[in-house]
Image (cartoon, rainbow, N blue to C red; front, top):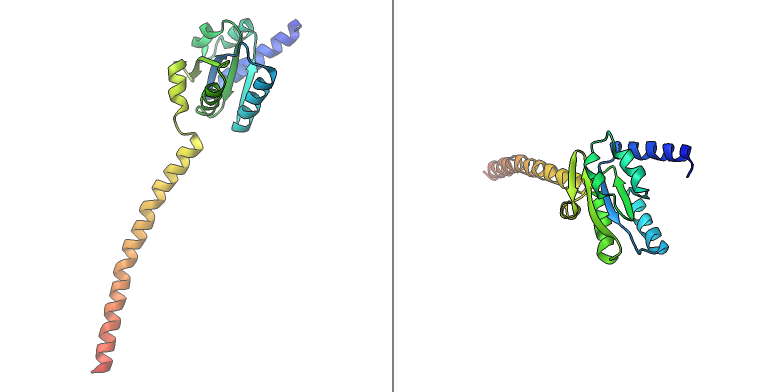
Amino acid sequence: MERAEKREFVTELNEVFKASGSVVVAHYAGATVAQMNDFRSKMRAAGGTVKVAKNRLAKIALQGTEAEGISGLFNGQTLIAYSNDPITAPKVVVDFAKTNDKIVVLGGAMGTTTLNAEAVKSLATLPSLDELRAKLLGMIQTPATRIAGVVQAPASQLARVFSAYAKKDEAA
């Protein structure tokens, strides 16, 4: 890389660290090109991105961001996985690491919080933002349908009572 390319890469990576909901750092030593391409495609499909960066450039890019605490994780062959949704990147990395022993989660960051490997794994077990929204919407709609049923029930019972009295009067 030339010096100008390095500057551009550091600037781009700095913006990524500032804008991402979560960042996961992992070792990928021994992973084949096919495995890495498969990993990248799974991450892209989920809405995240995987980058392999030089450790020195990544540490420079971390300066001045909320995720600056993870600079100690950049030793050896590391990759960076990130996404806007805080759950997506950890979920995809942990799922891929279960089937591929070459990917080893080191830690990560979510906003100002520095995460160790166990925290990233526990974060991966949480439902995604879209799943939480769907559950919340379902919880909100359920009481509304119950209220509508309760409100309609007395009206229908009153209608039956009036109908019974009307039939009684007609018979008399």
